[in-house]
Amino acid sequence: MDNFKAVPLPSSFLHTPDGKAEGLLGEYYNNTDYSGKPTFTRVDKGIDFDWAGESKTLGITLDERAFSYYDPAKHVWVIERGQYIVYAAASSRDLRLNTTVTLK
Image (cartoon, rainbow, N blue to C red; front, top):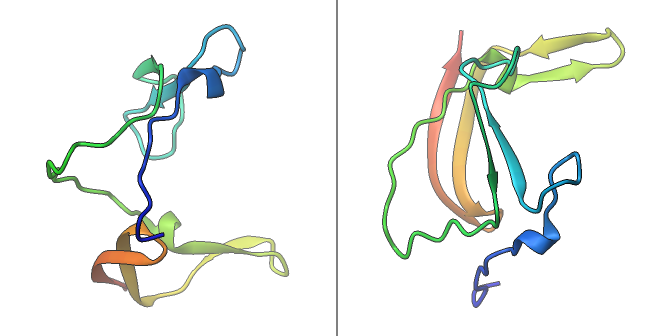
């Protein structure tokens, strides 16, 4: 995997849900539960997010649901309070960043 080179994924591998267009349909919402109609939609003709060494700063909002799991015995979503380590990674073998989050 050390010599892995990402290559663009051509649009011929991707199709919109209705099958009428090549590409990947992106739907963008102005809320965290994806309710209602998307605020913005677009079709990307291919996936090629290689920024050639350029760095990007981004933030990700994680609400309590991001730390929950479904308990099938109780038929409910459970959130356990305590500390979690959140990782940002290029792959499962390349963990680049981490931070500790405490749910009270």
